[in-house]
Image (cartoon, rainbow, N blue to C red; front, side, top):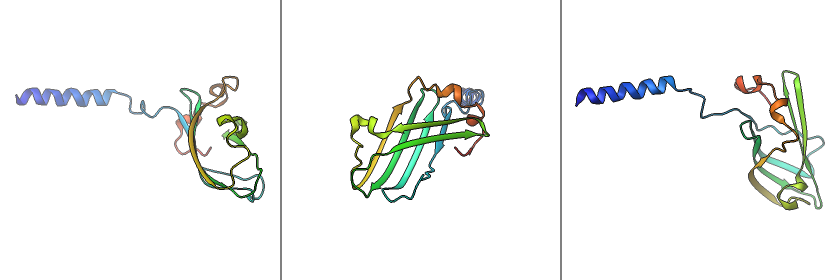
Length: 140
C-alpha cells in the first residue's frame, strides 16, 4: 500500500512539473490608471480597473465614479503604447454601451463592472505586440 501512494505522488508531481505553469493565466493586459484630459470637475473617478483578454478579444472593467454635473456625456479613450511599437488608440463612446443607460451620466456615485467584446473590425490582436504579454508589470 505504501508503494502505491508513493507511486501516485510521483505521478502527480511529474504531471505538475510537465504542465505549463502559465496556462491558467492567459494573455492579458491590466491597468488601473486614469488620466484626465481636463480638470476633473464633471466626473470624479474613485476606482478604475481595466483588463484586456487577448484570447477572446474582450475587456473587463470595474469602475467607481461620481458625476457632479447634470447632462454630462463622456467617452473613454484607451491608449496603449508598448515600447513605442504600434501604439493603439481607441475611443469608446459610453453612450453606445448598456442601451444608452450611461447618457447622460447619473449625478450620483455609481459603480459598475462588466465584460464587453471588442469589435472584430478593430482587430487588436494584430495591433498589440507579443512583448506586451511577456514582460510582467509593463505599464499600459
